[in-house]
Length: 244
Image 1 (cartoon, rainbow, N blue to C red):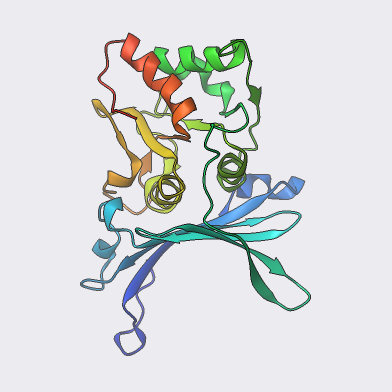
Image 2: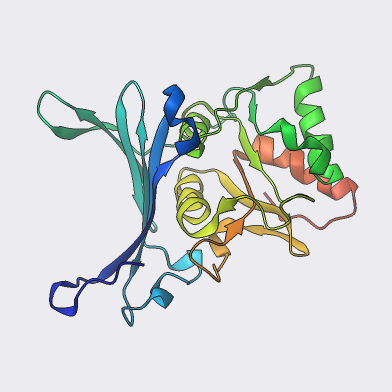
Protein backbone atom coordinates (compact mmCIF):
# COMPACT_ATOMS: atom_id res chain seq x y z
CA UNK A 1 0.00 0.00 0.00
CA UNK A 2 0.99 3.62 -0.54
CA UNK A 3 0.30 5.66 2.59
CA UNK A 4 -0.05 9.37 1.80
CA UNK A 5 1.73 11.70 4.27
CA UNK A 6 -0.63 13.14 6.86
CA UNK A 7 -0.18 16.72 5.64
CA UNK A 8 -1.30 15.71 2.14
CA UNK A 9 -3.86 13.05 3.01
CA UNK A 10 -7.51 13.34 2.05
CA UNK A 11 -10.72 11.68 3.19
CA UNK A 12 -10.61 8.59 1.02
CA UNK A 13 -8.56 5.50 0.19
CA UNK A 14 -8.49 3.78 -3.19
CA UNK A 15 -7.75 0.24 -4.34
CA UNK A 16 -7.17 -0.35 -8.03
CA UNK A 17 -5.99 -2.77 -10.64
CA UNK A 18 -3.92 -0.48 -12.88
CA UNK A 19 -3.90 -2.78 -15.90
CA UNK A 20 -6.52 -5.50 -15.88
CA UNK A 21 -5.92 -8.03 -18.66
CA UNK A 22 -2.20 -7.21 -18.81
CA UNK A 23 -1.38 -10.72 -20.08
CA UNK A 24 -3.16 -9.71 -23.31
CA UNK A 25 -1.35 -6.43 -23.86
CA UNK A 26 1.35 -7.73 -26.22
CA UNK A 27 -1.31 -8.88 -28.71
CA UNK A 28 -3.25 -5.58 -28.49
CA UNK A 29 -6.37 -7.01 -26.84
CA UNK A 30 -8.58 -4.65 -24.83
CA UNK A 31 -7.36 -3.96 -21.30
CA UNK A 32 -8.56 -1.69 -18.53
CA UNK A 33 -8.32 -0.23 -15.05
CA UNK A 34 -10.67 -1.06 -12.13
CA UNK A 35 -10.98 0.89 -8.87
CA UNK A 36 -12.91 0.97 -5.61
CA UNK A 37 -13.09 3.85 -3.12
CA UNK A 38 -13.65 3.77 0.65
CA UNK A 39 -13.85 6.48 3.27
CA UNK A 40 -10.68 6.69 5.34
CA UNK A 41 -10.80 5.68 8.99
CA UNK A 42 -7.41 5.24 10.62
CA UNK A 43 -5.22 5.75 7.56
CA UNK A 44 -3.88 2.19 7.53
CA UNK A 45 -4.35 -0.71 5.12
CA UNK A 46 -7.27 -1.83 7.28
CA UNK A 47 -9.29 0.99 5.72
CA UNK A 48 -9.48 -1.17 2.59
CA UNK A 49 -10.07 -4.53 4.26
CA UNK A 50 -13.76 -3.89 4.83
CA UNK A 51 -17.00 -5.29 3.52
CA UNK A 52 -17.88 -4.41 -0.04
CA UNK A 53 -21.05 -2.91 1.41
CA UNK A 54 -18.86 -0.01 2.61
CA UNK A 55 -17.48 0.75 -0.86
CA UNK A 56 -18.74 4.25 -1.72
CA UNK A 57 -17.59 4.50 -5.33
CA UNK A 58 -16.46 2.05 -7.99
CA UNK A 59 -15.55 2.21 -11.64
CA UNK A 60 -13.45 1.05 -14.54
CA UNK A 61 -11.77 2.37 -17.65
CA UNK A 62 -11.80 0.31 -20.84
CA UNK A 63 -8.98 0.93 -23.32
CA UNK A 64 -9.89 -0.18 -26.82
CA UNK A 65 -11.07 1.50 -30.03
CA UNK A 66 -12.26 4.19 -27.61
CA UNK A 67 -11.40 4.94 -23.99
CA UNK A 68 -14.48 4.64 -21.80
CA UNK A 69 -14.92 5.41 -18.11
CA UNK A 70 -17.83 3.81 -16.24
CA UNK A 71 -18.48 4.49 -12.57
CA UNK A 72 -21.09 4.66 -9.86
CA UNK A 73 -21.51 5.96 -6.33
CA UNK A 74 -23.14 3.83 -3.62
CA UNK A 75 -26.91 4.12 -3.98
CA UNK A 76 -26.73 5.96 -7.31
CA UNK A 77 -26.89 5.29 -11.04
CA UNK A 78 -24.19 3.89 -13.31
CA UNK A 79 -22.84 6.48 -15.73
CA UNK A 80 -20.53 6.18 -18.73
CA UNK A 81 -18.08 8.65 -20.27
CA UNK A 82 -16.00 8.50 -23.45
CA UNK A 83 -12.66 10.23 -23.90
CA UNK A 84 -12.68 12.81 -26.69
CA UNK A 85 -8.98 13.18 -27.57
CA UNK A 86 -9.61 16.35 -29.58
CA UNK A 87 -10.48 18.27 -26.41
CA UNK A 88 -8.77 16.05 -23.84
CA UNK A 89 -11.98 15.56 -21.85
CA UNK A 90 -14.33 12.72 -20.94
CA UNK A 91 -17.78 13.34 -22.43
CA UNK A 92 -20.90 11.96 -20.74
CA UNK A 93 -22.24 9.49 -23.32
CA UNK A 94 -24.07 6.74 -21.42
CA UNK A 95 -26.78 7.77 -18.96
CA UNK A 96 -28.19 5.61 -16.15
CA UNK A 97 -26.76 2.41 -17.61
CA UNK A 98 -28.98 -0.66 -17.10
CA UNK A 99 -28.88 -4.32 -17.97
CA UNK A 100 -31.32 -5.05 -20.82
CA UNK A 101 -34.72 -5.69 -19.20
CA UNK A 102 -35.23 -8.93 -21.15
CA UNK A 103 -31.73 -10.21 -20.39
CA UNK A 104 -30.32 -8.95 -23.67
CA UNK A 105 -28.21 -11.01 -26.02
CA UNK A 106 -27.76 -14.68 -25.21
CA UNK A 107 -24.05 -14.68 -24.47
CA UNK A 108 -22.11 -16.71 -21.92
CA UNK A 109 -18.55 -15.75 -21.04
CA UNK A 110 -16.16 -18.07 -19.21
CA UNK A 111 -12.85 -19.86 -19.51
CA UNK A 112 -13.98 -23.32 -20.57
CA UNK A 113 -10.41 -24.54 -20.20
CA UNK A 114 -11.31 -24.86 -16.51
CA UNK A 115 -14.39 -27.01 -17.19
CA UNK A 116 -12.99 -30.18 -15.60
CA UNK A 117 -12.33 -28.28 -12.36
CA UNK A 118 -15.86 -26.80 -11.96
CA UNK A 119 -18.54 -28.15 -9.64
CA UNK A 120 -21.38 -30.03 -11.32
CA UNK A 121 -24.01 -27.23 -11.20
CA UNK A 122 -21.67 -24.85 -13.07
CA UNK A 123 -20.95 -27.55 -15.65
CA UNK A 124 -24.68 -28.20 -16.04
CA UNK A 125 -25.46 -24.49 -16.46
CA UNK A 126 -22.79 -23.96 -19.11
CA UNK A 127 -24.03 -27.04 -20.97
CA UNK A 128 -27.54 -25.57 -20.81
CA UNK A 129 -26.31 -22.32 -22.33
CA UNK A 130 -24.51 -24.20 -25.10
CA UNK A 131 -27.33 -26.61 -25.90
CA UNK A 132 -29.99 -23.92 -25.84
CA UNK A 133 -32.60 -22.56 -23.47
CA UNK A 134 -36.09 -22.39 -25.00
CA UNK A 135 -34.52 -23.75 -28.14
CA UNK A 136 -32.02 -20.92 -28.48
CA UNK A 137 -28.34 -21.75 -27.93
CA UNK A 138 -26.12 -19.03 -26.46
CA UNK A 139 -23.04 -17.57 -28.11
CA UNK A 140 -19.66 -17.91 -26.37
CA UNK A 141 -17.61 -14.72 -25.96
CA UNK A 142 -14.54 -14.66 -23.71
CA UNK A 143 -11.80 -12.03 -24.00
CA UNK A 144 -9.86 -12.91 -20.86
CA UNK A 145 -9.74 -9.26 -19.80
CA UNK A 146 -12.35 -8.73 -17.06
CA UNK A 147 -13.02 -5.11 -17.99
CA UNK A 148 -13.74 -6.04 -21.61
CA UNK A 149 -15.94 -9.00 -20.69
CA UNK A 150 -17.92 -7.12 -18.02
CA UNK A 151 -18.32 -4.02 -20.22
CA UNK A 152 -19.81 -6.16 -22.99
CA UNK A 153 -22.05 -7.99 -20.51
CA UNK A 154 -23.31 -4.71 -19.08
CA UNK A 155 -24.08 -3.26 -22.51
CA UNK A 156 -25.34 -6.33 -24.36
CA UNK A 157 -26.59 -8.63 -21.60
CA UNK A 158 -25.64 -12.25 -20.98
CA UNK A 159 -23.54 -13.68 -18.17
CA UNK A 160 -19.89 -13.67 -17.03
CA UNK A 161 -18.72 -16.70 -15.05
CA UNK A 162 -15.45 -17.17 -13.15
CA UNK A 163 -16.40 -19.56 -10.34
CA UNK A 164 -14.49 -21.18 -7.53
CA UNK A 165 -13.33 -24.63 -8.57
CA UNK A 166 -11.10 -27.53 -7.57
CA UNK A 167 -8.00 -25.76 -8.89
CA UNK A 168 -8.83 -22.36 -7.35
CA UNK A 169 -11.18 -22.99 -4.40
CA UNK A 170 -11.26 -19.30 -3.50
CA UNK A 171 -11.74 -18.17 -7.07
CA UNK A 172 -9.23 -16.47 -9.35
CA UNK A 173 -10.14 -12.78 -9.48
CA UNK A 174 -9.08 -10.26 -6.85
CA UNK A 175 -11.82 -9.43 -4.37
CA UNK A 176 -10.85 -5.88 -3.39
CA UNK A 177 -10.14 -4.32 -6.77
CA UNK A 178 -11.94 -6.58 -9.23
CA UNK A 179 -14.84 -8.39 -7.56
CA UNK A 180 -16.22 -5.71 -5.22
CA UNK A 181 -16.09 -2.71 -7.59
CA UNK A 182 -17.58 -4.67 -10.48
CA UNK A 183 -20.27 -6.04 -8.16
CA UNK A 184 -21.31 -2.53 -7.14
CA UNK A 185 -21.56 -1.47 -10.79
CA UNK A 186 -23.44 -4.60 -11.87
CA UNK A 187 -25.97 -4.48 -9.03
CA UNK A 188 -26.70 -0.79 -9.46
CA UNK A 189 -27.28 -1.40 -13.16
CA UNK A 190 -29.97 -3.94 -12.28
CA UNK A 191 -27.85 -7.08 -12.52
CA UNK A 192 -26.73 -9.76 -10.08
CA UNK A 193 -23.20 -10.25 -8.76
CA UNK A 194 -23.05 -13.65 -7.09
CA UNK A 195 -20.22 -15.68 -5.62
CA UNK A 196 -21.81 -18.91 -6.76
CA UNK A 197 -21.33 -21.70 -4.22
CA UNK A 198 -18.50 -20.43 -2.04
CA UNK A 199 -17.55 -21.26 1.54
CA UNK A 200 -20.71 -23.27 2.10
CA UNK A 201 -23.29 -20.93 0.61
CA UNK A 202 -24.28 -18.75 -2.34
CA UNK A 203 -23.80 -15.08 -1.53
CA UNK A 204 -23.28 -11.62 -2.94
CA UNK A 205 -19.82 -10.48 -3.99
CA UNK A 206 -20.67 -7.03 -2.60
CA UNK A 207 -20.97 -8.49 0.91
CA UNK A 208 -17.53 -10.11 0.95
CA UNK A 209 -14.87 -8.77 3.30
CA UNK A 210 -11.33 -9.15 1.93
CA UNK A 211 -8.80 -10.45 4.46
CA UNK A 212 -5.79 -9.30 2.43
CA UNK A 213 -5.20 -6.76 -0.32
CA UNK A 214 -4.69 -9.43 -2.98
CA UNK A 215 -7.15 -12.07 -1.76
CA UNK A 216 -9.37 -13.70 -4.36
CA UNK A 217 -13.06 -14.44 -4.85
CA UNK A 218 -15.34 -16.23 -7.33
CA UNK A 219 -17.62 -14.21 -9.57
CA UNK A 220 -20.86 -14.83 -11.47
CA UNK A 221 -22.29 -11.64 -12.96
CA UNK A 222 -25.24 -11.07 -15.24
CA UNK A 223 -28.94 -10.38 -15.44
CA UNK A 224 -31.64 -12.34 -13.56
CA UNK A 225 -32.51 -14.41 -16.65
CA UNK A 226 -29.07 -15.98 -16.95
CA UNK A 227 -27.95 -16.07 -13.31
CA UNK A 228 -31.29 -17.82 -12.73
CA UNK A 229 -30.14 -20.69 -14.96
CA UNK A 230 -27.14 -21.26 -12.68
CA UNK A 231 -29.27 -20.96 -9.55
CA UNK A 232 -31.68 -23.56 -10.95
CA UNK A 233 -28.77 -25.96 -11.41
CA UNK A 234 -27.71 -25.39 -7.81
CA UNK A 235 -31.28 -26.03 -6.63
CA UNK A 236 -31.32 -29.36 -8.48
CA UNK A 237 -28.15 -30.24 -6.57
CA UNK A 238 -29.91 -29.53 -3.29
CA UNK A 239 -28.15 -26.24 -2.59
CA UNK A 240 -30.16 -23.36 -1.16
CA UNK A 241 -30.20 -20.35 -3.50
CA UNK A 242 -31.19 -16.71 -3.01
CA UNK A 243 -34.43 -15.39 -4.43
CA UNK A 244 -33.93 -13.40 -7.63
